[in-house]
Structure formats: C-alpha cells, structure tokens
Length: 215
Image: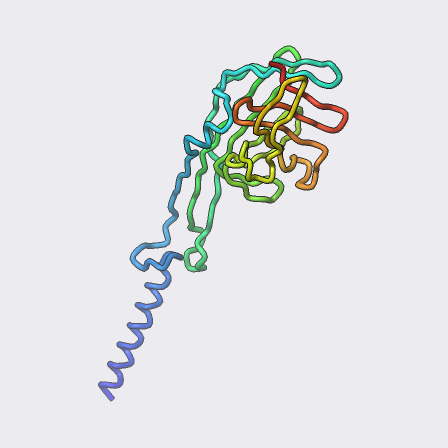
C-alpha cells in the first residue's frame, strides 16, 4: 500500500510538471522559454527604396486634360513604421505574442498655391481594402490612391506591365499600370502609370480627369 501511495504521488507530480511545462511553452514548441511578447523589425531593402526615382526633394509638374497645371515640391522623405500584433496560438499564453514593426516612408509633394498634394508612400507591409500587401507603393492624389507592388514596377513579366507608351508626344519605356485604387479592387476607371526611370507618368482619377507629367 505504501509503495502504491508513493507511486500515485510521483505520477501526480509528473502530471503537474508536464502541465506547467506545456503552459510555458511558446507556440513554436520551444519549452525553455516563457510566454513573453517579443518584437521583430522588418526593413525596406535598398532595391525597394530605389524602385522609384524620388529623393524626397523632387518637383512633380503635371497638367490635366482640362488644362490645369500643378507644381508639387517634395518636402523630404519621412520614415515611419506600420504595426502588426500576432498573438501566440496557445490559450495558455494569454495576450502575449509577437509585435512586428515594418519600415515605410512617405514623400509629400505640395503645390502650396493650388493646395494640392501628390503623396508617395512605400510600405514594407500594410493592409488595404482588407488585403495584406508586401513592398507596396501607394500614390495618393486628390483623396484617391493607387497601388503597385514595388518588385513589379517596370517588370515585363508582371501583369501590371504595359510596355512603352506615348504621352504628349514623348515615349516612355517599361511602363506599369496600377492594379486597383482605394475605391475598390475591381475599379479600372482610376489608375496610375509609372516606371522606374521617370516615376509618375500619368494619373487618371476618372475618365473625365486625367493628369499627365510635364517635363
């Protein structure tokens, strides 16, 4: 009886120890680390940063099909980070998880006379219209945005590639067209045309308002 009693105690101790170890395990299976939140940082590569030819202090000049013109002066590159929290999958870890920070930059080009901005943002990762997008350019103009994957701009193999186009008597090479706008992933009436050499070439807000680069 005595041996049975001690055996029962040892089994109980073993079960309790196993429970404690499991409760402290990380979702990745490492049992030697407690459920403590961690931080990860992700940075833009040099190739991503140099996709479009803007330094931050460039001037973007554009003319509309209605004859209006703008001259937007860059105010510098502003670096910031987007944030994502990924909780650990095990309930025993509570509200702990991984805090992920993704580098991004923004350039605001302003026409201070017309009070119009052309804003270019490059994200390492962000969400738009409930879709997660990596290495994504956002070109915002007059409260409307168009989006490009950085690694697809001027890539002949990408679906957004349209090749060479002629705009106002000048030919632009290796041009890409945005896939969708901030209105809808199905919107084809609003788009932007860009390439690596010239940056923004044309922005169509709608079929009745089209803005084109002035050299």
